[in-house]
Length: 99
Image (tube, rainbow, N blue to C red; front, side, top):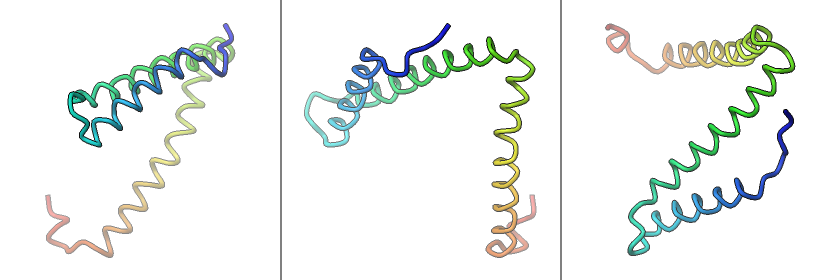
């Protein structure tokens, strides 16, 4: 199954979500549910990610998909942890390292 790159219906939902969040942050009266726009963004992201995941699993297989995911995520995670540990060595006192 091939998914289209641009979907007008999804774009319309994104516009609705964006407008609701912006109006909420500007304090427009009667718009007290700006958080709903954030929820809509999460639902849209989940929908699109599911399509992408299903397409890649169909083409490469489940094991190859998870290996590629692992190789994409873990190096950035290790780099971030090492960077924060080095930063902590120079900025935190020894008392702050105790559990």
